[in-house]
Amino acid sequence: MDSGTDFPARPLHRLKETPSELFARVAHLPGAVFLDSALVGGDSVSVIGFAPEAIVSGQTDGMDRIREWLLSRRQASWAGPLAGGAAIGMISYEGRAEFGLYPALLVHHHASGEWHDSGGLARLLPPRSEVIGLGQGKGLHEVAPVRVEAEMTREDYLRRVRRALDYIAAGDIYQVNLAQRFSGKWPAGLSSYGLYLALREVSPAPYAAFLKFGEREILSSSPEQFLKMSGRDVWTRPIKGTRPRFADPARDARSAAELISSDKENAELVMITDLERNDLGQVCEFGSVEVTELAGLECFQQVFHLVSTVRGRLRPEVDHIAALEACFPGGSITGAPKRRAMEIIAELEKGPRGPYTGAIGYFGVNGESQFNIAIRTAVISGARMEYQVGAGIVADSDPAAEYEETLHKGRGLRRALDEWQKRQDFFAIAGESNQVTVPHGIPAPFLRFP
Image 1 (cartoon, one colour):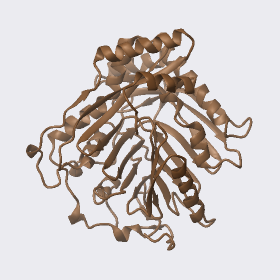
Image 2: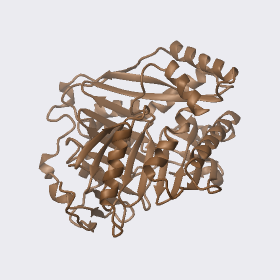
Image 3: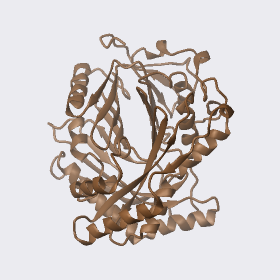
């Protein structure tokens, strides 16, 4: 689309589809992106983009191109969420950026239910009749089931945890996040968007996303906000500590109470909160960084987490790209001290992480930016599907318990695969009103919903 022609962000009363239904029209297109915040509700927005002006990738050179593009489009008159467009994409754990440059976007306001078109993009929407279904014309009975397996044995993972504990005992680190990878064959002819819809149903999350760049598709149901920036204000919300959810209310409440009272999990979060405070201190005005929430309980469909909130005010010379680069990758998925923890991760894990534990989100032309931590995230590339799950290792970690934590975190992806393969078409069942239940008996001050 010609970026030289701008349109005011205007309501689209003729669009009645939900964000997940509307994105089904374009999910198969190269460069299609969906930032999905249906779980958040309130004044949040979901964003759909396609037909990008360009796809940029690389390390420093890619980020420089994004910065130039944002500056070239910035105007004082832009108003409203993502008015003027945005650079939307991801940064891998190893620091490689891949972004589409979108001068026009479709933005859904969950509070009002209205769509806004910030650049005339609606006129390019394919008709509903062109929606490609789950199997792109094939029934699920015609393709082999998707089977994913761990790439290391349970004993392999336990051995790596014990090695990490040796490093902690030697004083190299206080904490490290160790992940394991699950992978399998992805049958030809299947639309990965059907799997994404299953994932958002069984494991709804506030910072979900679907990206299609080239032959690679990224499906994220992340509960964790890495950075949110509005003008010079910046927030980060690290997560640590995990307990499973249960259908039985009494058992569910016990699981939540156990997490809240865990000395280990609270100490782990305090360490990472302090790391994030120091990271923000590199780019924020002196004295502006503060912890506004410490160890609140967040309730998700499959698990409970503990979360903190740290906020600050960026120095005038620091733009959003520089702020993200200074804080990247997030401390909750590396460990502390960050540099040494990353060296140990490189030694103990099998191969690069790629998109996993990187960041997915946007830099807005109008000075709004937001990124998740890419956990609970699957990658489909060609004939291969993979996802990774990790656990935070500290001095008193039990290797077997940490292994089980990785399985709890992967439960949503496993269930999504199972449910997706049972049904013929997830487009018909996806909704925007996923509800997360409240554990009984937990005092209100401990409860927080994303």
